[in-house]
Image (cartoon, rainbow, N blue to C red):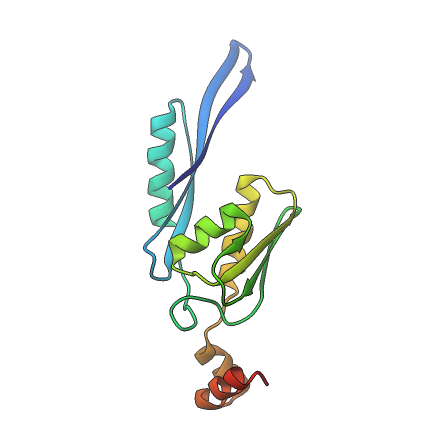
Length: 158
């Protein structure tokens, strides 16, 4: 999915050189996705390069019950801060974060973006937040507990 294409100019000795940059986000709706940034002298070439970078730059997320996350996640990029909170009533919050989460196959999250909300910072901060996600198996191994106890505690709200 193409997020944005910008026209960028740079001053050289001989004059102004115009190029384009594109931001692309992709996913398979099953916990796998990535983003790419491409630069070229033509917008179509920039999009093609960004798609190639997105395929090369893939992240995996273990979804809780196939549709959400286990706990609150926070990601920062420059002065942008993205907070992802699990919920039960669909995707809400920042539209760009919601599109990224939808492509990753996560459907029950509230996504809030604070600070500088330009597209590049929001995308990077969202993926940084998703990279900090841990499945219940990983949490149980870190704590030295059995997974069945953790799931029962989560269900009971302890």
